[in-house]
Image 1 (cartoon, rainbow, N blue to C red):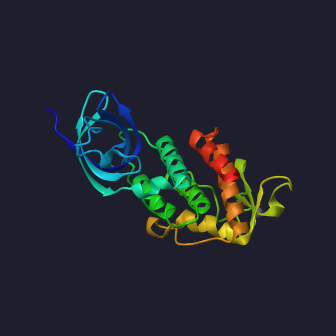
Image 2: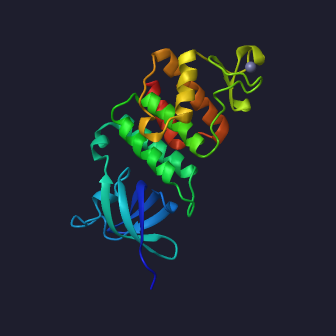
Image 3: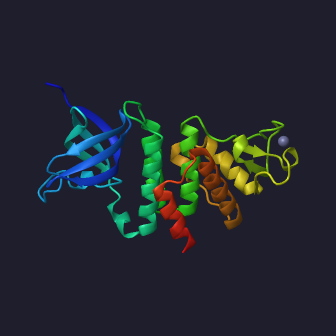
Length: 246
Ligand SMILES: [Zn+2]
């Protein structure tokens, strides 16, 4: 008989299965993105009800099955239930979870990613959502070793304080180093934000704010870079963009 395993992670997806069960996707520090099955989790008496909600962070005890893990028990670290009345926060959270799913796979540990999701979901409750989205997008690339180059010009390698962000060159360039129609302009505050997020540790990742102009430039370049980088729009991103346009 196989032994149970313990993982710390977040429920990134949760759906009803059969009459009383739930099917989950958990992004875990130890085992990366895994599928799990929570038997009886829809019964009103189940001890798993709360832990099986989307966005819940918990310590899960799992039994390895043939195609998926089975949830034996769970100890909640933090749930984000109170967020469920804020539709924009839910849409952002769903986008973060979908994106995190793209950047994780089974049996590849993802402790930094779980940590990033945790500080991001907390920030979503207090900080500007547009800022949280851009910071999350950038830091997700950074922890995957694929962050854009933001400290020096991608062309001349001199330090940059303002300039343009050029998707196909994966970072910031001086205005004078690229042909004029290329790239999106960044003011000094937007450049500083990109540089801060690139190196900040998780606990202070969201400890800053931006003026409207710098925020809109920062958010715009990250969105445009993701479109270029991922090559398609995620469903959850399209929903967010629609809400933004309202
Ligand atoms: Zn340059």
